[in-house]
Length: 196
Length: 213
Image (tube, rainbow over all chains, first blue to last red; front, side, top):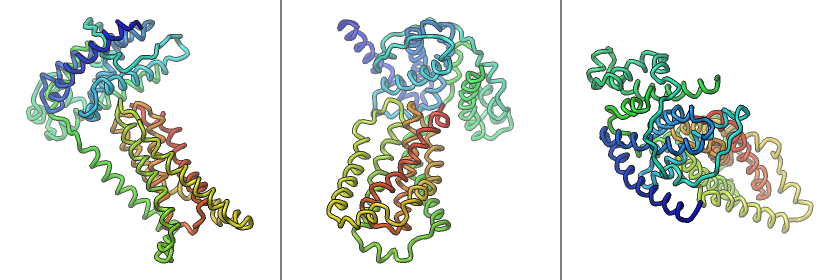
């Protein structure tokens, strides 16, 4: 990498850090719009990062983008606001990518250049392709106590209270159902990949 | 599903995230599982009846301090390995320094001892069982710390597993010191260390499998 590129990458990364960190922090405090904007920008960064590294598996990049987004969402409580967001996102994206590659090892030769932790924030790619895996289908295989709260609140847009009335569950059961359901969804993706 | 749909699902109506309580819950869990370790020892090995007189020996306190220092270092490594992007930094020094210090102390003791006494200082009477007793006592904290780690986000699962094992082994060694009859520094430097490293090695082996997320 030339010095000029490096400087460019560094600048972009620090801009992304400055832009994304406040969005995530507000999102963590319950601001849905800020969190939505954070996820949207994050998905573009992840897509560019993974496309650049999984050059022979472009078909699966969007699957991995979604899987990484879900992981980041499920573990967002592990973000320590005294630490740089760049390092946190990069560590998760890299972990998910290595996990993915390891599962495919032997089937395809590939090269994964080593990168520094600014790499995820180096470029954005807003051209969202379609994922091959259909999360909606996976969602259908979840048990009712997880599926119903997610469908009512997250897909149909009911409030937690409305969803509780519609399903006959308690409000806390709805909240727990969403939380555990999204974790179960991530676990389903993992096991699906292992058996593929 | 399109990624934008997933984003909409993830972002919609999430509410605030419960943060900052992790440390407290970890402390609570550790207190509980160390208590369980104490109970496990009381029921299986028993606590020394001459503990009060043993506590007057400086070596007893070395036996407590050595694994305690290692446990604090293990806790720091545990915490860092559970959070993406956190580097270990100097935390491994917290393990290396007590081990080197204890080894140096043990060498000094051996060097200055009567040649005929050295074997007893090193092997005591319980070297065969000591590491395995410590590993056995490590079970409660090991299980508890692995379960807790699964709630966090270890991006280096083998390291995280080893940290769980080290935390379990070191806390178990502190508890085991209340049973153990040995007072030789060389004994502590070798057999206690082995007992603490055994769970750490097991943790590294199972981490890859159990800590995936």
